[in-house]
Amino acid sequence: MIRPNRRVLVFSAHAADFCSRSGGAILRFVDAGCDVQIYNMSYGEKCESPLLWNENPDITVDEVKAIRKKEIEAAAAVLGAPISCLDYDDSPLLVGPERRAEILGLVRAFQPDLVLCHWKNDYLHPDHVEAANAVIWASRYCFRPGIKTEHPPCPAPEIVCYEPIAGIGPVVGYVPNLYVDITAVWDRKVEAMLALATQPELPEKYGIIAAYRALEAQITANMKETKMAEAFVRLGTEAAL
Image 1 (cartoon, helix red, strand yellow):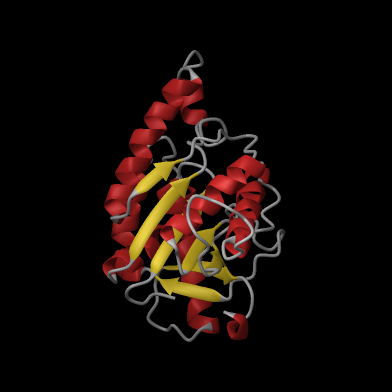
Image 2 (cartoon, helix red, strand yellow; image 1 turned 180 degrees about the vertical axis):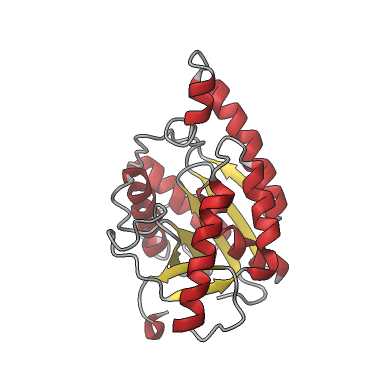
């Protein structure tokens, strides 16, 4: 998956998803000279920010968004990729026809050959499923000339899904078929996660996951030297992509 000159579009339902689940791969892509663009659909102002609400029950949604905006920009800067937030709000995240058309336009404008997004069946977090469905829709209709947007049609990109909610992979049918060795960039991923200070648990939680995915990679993918890894599910088949 990691090779030079790729055009990689990353979609994240909430503030931290792009970093905690695929930050290592993003670093690898950037280091390989790829063009990477990240879009958050929300700031995670409700479901991802309990620390802020618990510390200050009188805080406003706009104040939470402002804090999370600074955090995601700092995290993305560590990863070396630009980021924008579509500010669709979360819990519930609702991506109706107009917003799907906007996402389709973003895909056509960037013309990615790879899109990273949430696992399509991460149903224990409905926001993740909503985001994945919209991204898959846009990625599978971006080449159809009958759907008009500001930008012309582009080839359909490869779609790869990153981790669901930590620890629920077996429940939601998440069986990785692709591993990325992030051993060499792990410290930088931790630095990016630390920038997401509203969620201080991220480095420890995703350190456990990265070590376990590395064990899987060693055994199932013959990646014997891997100490830390991220796992993904590539949609479709090798012959079709």
